[in-house]
Amino acid sequence: MLHQRQQFSDTGDLHPIDLVETVAQSHEWDFDRVGEDQIAMVVEGQWRSYSVTLAWSEVDETLRMVCCFEMEPPAEALPGLYEVLNLANDQCWAGAFAFWPQQKMMVYRYGLVLAGGACAQVDQINHMVAEAILAGERFYPAFQLVCWGGRAPADAMQVAIAEAYGHA
Image (tube, rainbow, N blue to C red; front, side, top):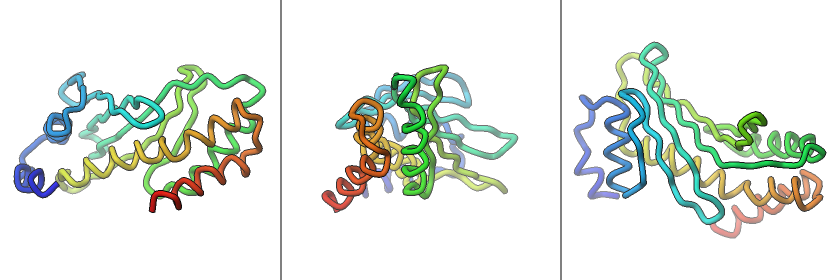
C-alpha cells in the first residue's frame, strides 16, 4: 500500500476515472474503460465475482460506484429479502444495498462527492471498492439464507454479524 501511495501521490490533475483505471491496473483487476467518464471492472470475492462500475458526473461532482452481483430470488422470498436489505443497510455507513428485480441484481451503491474542485485520492478509491466488496461478502450469506434457506431476516443477519466479529 505504501508503494501505491508514493506512486500515485500527485493525483490532483487526474480525471477521477483515469485515477480509477490506474488503481485497477495496480491491483490487476479486469476492467473495461466504457467511456471517458465510466469504467467497469470485475473483482473476485470469496462468495462471488463482483461487477464494479464507477462513473463520474461533472454536473453533480460525484464519483458514483455501483457494485453488483446476480441474484434471482423466488418471488415468495422478496418480502424477506427486502427486510434483510433494510437490516443490512442499517449496518452500512458509507453505501447501501438495493435489489433491482428487473435486472436480477443485488447492488451496493456509493457516491463520493468531490464538490468545489476536490480531487479523488488513491486511498479513497481503494476504500470505496474494498468497502463494497466487504459488504457483499459480509451480507451475501444472510441474503442467501433468507431467499433459499427459509431463515427469518433477523436470524440470517446473525450470520453476517458473527462473521464480522470472527474476522476482527
